[in-house]
Each structure stands twice: as structure tokens, then as C-alpha cells.
Amino acid sequence: MSLSVARFAVTRTTVGLTGGVQLPVEFHVFPADSAKAAATLAVVPAILRYFDQQIGPYPFPDEKYAIAEFGRPSFREGQTITHLGPPLITGGAGAEQVVAHEIAHQWFGNALTVASWSDIWLNESLSEYMAWRWIRSARGDAAFRALVDSARVAPVAAPIVPASPADFNSLFGNATFQRGPAVLVKLEALIGSAAFESALRRYVHAHRHGVVRTADFQRACEEASGRPLDGFFADWVRGTRPL
Ligand SMILES: [Zn+2]
Image 1: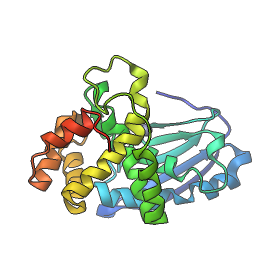
Image 2: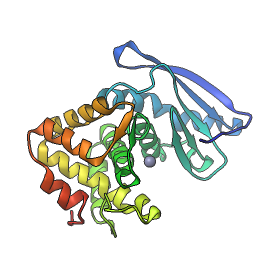
Image 3: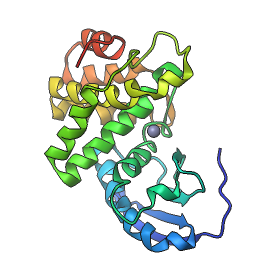
């Protein structure tokens, strides 16, 4: 849990989502950053609508989605609220990928919770993959390809899903944030975008407000595509086969 206490300048709006949901969206920022926050966070409603359509209904329709500024040079998501530090609230669009990643955690991490630290890629790699999808939707294919290409060559020391999560810090490195989303792009290319998008929705819907393991995600991909994927997951998810 986290608690932020400050004199915030508060902006409130609502975003229309699927099923007639009118979701309250709130920004709580330091008053001196109000103008910059309005520019940096203007994209939030569009990202919420995009994920709501792509992944399935926003998981907390009776609650809200909020962003709160906090006094750290970092960012953290929490259930229905994301904390962003002052370096992210620049007045420009430079934080868009981070903002999208943290919003995606409302589905991957909050609606669905991993059963084990070894499965943390189900939170992080899927959220980063969705951030890349948003970049592709908003900025085009070249920006998306640049993200994929840089991730493909990032050095990784361990599999995305380690046999044992002995080294906690290794769980939050390149394997999770670079290789993981790149492997998801590869999987999408293998089974086709329609099957992959169906798999995402199937996986989220089946395990909404539940606990998940990597086998649950693999099964959703196999059911949506009609293909056995043991080899793919052994080579690229539990193994370190080069991309
Ligand atoms: Zn994350």
C-alpha cells in the first residue's frame, strides 16, 4: 500500500467505456505542476478507452482511475491509482509509454494477480506489451518496431520465467521488461493478431479477480489459436533461445 499526502490540485472528468460505463478519472498533482500535468495526462482517457476495447472491460467500473503525483523520481501503480513522480510530469508526451504501462496493470496485476514471483512477467511483460500496442496505435508502426528492435537485442541473463525466483532483483530486469514483451510480439506473429487478441481477452475474462500462472496464459493462447504451444513456451519463455 502507499499513501500520498499533499496539497493537491485536483482535476476530475469521466470517460465513457464499453457497456455504458462512465468511469471517474481523477488527477491529483502538486499545484505548481498543474499546467504540465494537464498536457502530460491528456492522453489518459484515450488509453483507458483503447485498453477497455482491446483487453476487456475496465476491471473496477464502480471505482475510478486516478493518477497522483508523489515526491519521488519514479512511478508505481496501485489498484485504481498510479503514482507518478515530478520527472514524469514534464508537460510533454515523454511519459506516454510509462503512463500506458501503469494503466495496463489495472488488468495485468490488479484484476489478475500472479500466483508466484516466478510468474511476474504476466504482470510486467503483458503491461509493457500493451504499452507498445498503445504506442503503435498512437504513433504508428515505425515507433512500435523501434521498441521491438531495441528489446530484441537487450542482454538477458535469465529466462523470463525462472525455475526458481531465488534472485528477486533479476525478476525486474531485461528479461521481464524487454525480452518478455518482445516474445509476446513474436507469439502474436506466430498465431496471428486475431487469435492473440482473442487469447488476451479470454485470459483476462477467465481469471478476472483471480490468481494466475503462466500455464493459464499458455492455455488461453492454445485455445484461441488451436495450436499446441509447449515448444514455444519452453524455448522462449522458460528458456533463453535468442529472439
Ligand atoms: Zn509494471
